Picture 1 (cartoon, rainbow, N blue to C red):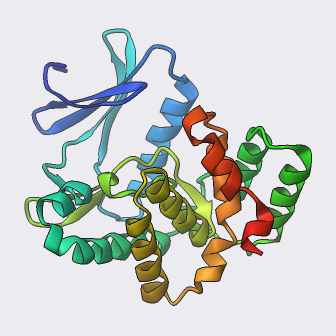
Picture 2: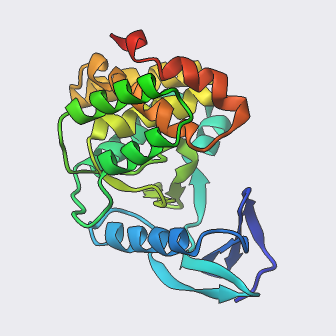
Length: 249
């Protein structure tokens, strides 16, 4: 494997292209269990028939763990929207269409979303009363088994040369309630300071899926608390406000 063509750099990983392959190389301190779980998630999602990069190999390169997948040549929906601002609304509709296709799938061996959220709430750093209220709300939400991406944002959807959308980065995939997945996407837009895109996304999703906006909003304190488990100081104040259960009553 050649590591001389960097296509992306993240906090704890570097992504390379080697011909028709993508090589995601993780830092030495990255959890081996998390790497293997990400690869397993992708292999399981691959079996649903969704357009995802096919996994080719999990191994070591230069003493670091890596995941090798097909390289999907194209442009992310985020970049396409920047390059064609007059098409922004159409790209957002496509973004939602792809998410709805994800939610129509079942992947029975994935981690349950509720279990993951429960762990994240316990690690949020919120006071005991707020954690209890959030846990009670989570336990009262309808129990679904839909495939949820967990980090569904426009940079994780690539349009290939034929315009076919492919979905990347399944590290956070779970099975559960699709509206939790929607609430997380809405939160991610807001964390990037794009309240306009957040509202447009939510309106389009609720319209296309015939989902009441209030139902998605019930998940917002829960997903905010789960995001707090990442312990990013710059997000703390914003997420603490969102994690207030009474705000959405």
